[in-house]
Structure formats: structure tokens, C-alpha cells
Amino acid sequence: DRQGESERVKGYRASSHLTIRIRDIEKTGTVLDKAVSMGINHVIDNICFSISDPKDILQKARRKAVHDAKTKAETIVSELGCRLGRISCISTESGHSYPMPPMQIQQGSRSVGFSQHSTSPLPTIATGENSYKVSVEITWEIIQTTSEM
Image (cartoon, rainbow, N blue to C red; front, side, top):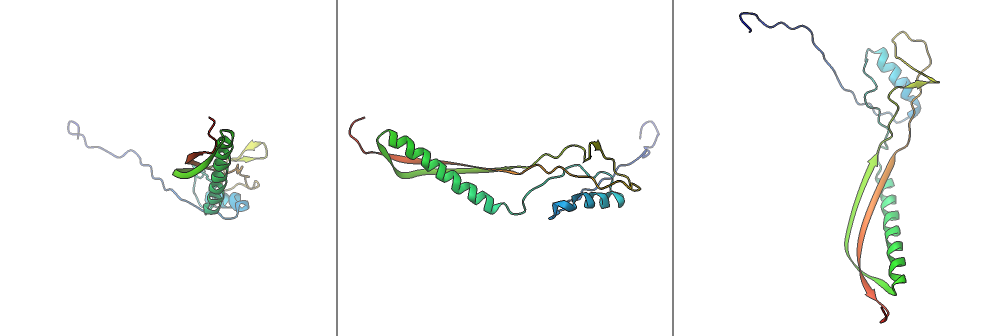
């Protein structure tokens, strides 16, 4: 209340967030079109493509990372006339990056605006690719096999 004046609401803004998981990527355009026809007007804030359960992919990547680390270590110690001993430390890190879809959905070569009354074909969504990275660091004791060093 300023000098006897009461505050008045001049407007309001409401928003809702919805997460939809689509298992068949070919249906993405249909789902977006349906959402817009139901009145959702802020559809494309964060389209994210991912794998439902990346456990097997990460496990395979870890195995490869361990194999690569051991192969590199064996090459180095072999050149030094040594061999690998006991493992004294192992650390691992994994990460995932999502594909970044274009800011606008593209149809052919032009940008598409959604409209409830549109009769245009469904938009196509550029999917990109998911990237999973696993890093393994292994520390071995080194056993000297030759007396000449």
C-alpha cells in the first residue's frame, strides 16, 4: 500500500512442465503435434534423446577401458624390461552427453511453427547421437625383471 493506494494484479503467468518418454522415435512428430493441438504452446524447451537403461553400454565401455589401460601399461613396462605386479589402485568415471537438437524443429528446409489448425505435414526431429564415456585409471606395482636399468 503506497500512500493509500492498494496494489492491483495487472496480469499473471502460469506454466506447467511435462515430461514424455517416447519409446518409438518415429512417433515424436505425432506426439508434438498432438500436444500442440491440445493447447500446449511451449513444447520444445528441452527435447532430450537418451537410452532408457544404459547399464549394458556402460559395462561394455568399462570392459574396453580396462582392457585398453592394461594393454598400454603392459606395452610401457615391457619396453622397460619389467612386468606388471599387483594392482594398488583403481578409479573410474563415466559420463553421458545428450544430443543437442536444433533450437527449431525443421520441416524440409524451413522452420515450422505449430498451429492448432495446421494441415501441414508433421515436423521431423533431428536426433543426433548419444555419447557415453568411461575413464579408468589403474595403478600397478611394477616388477623389475632385468637387473640392467
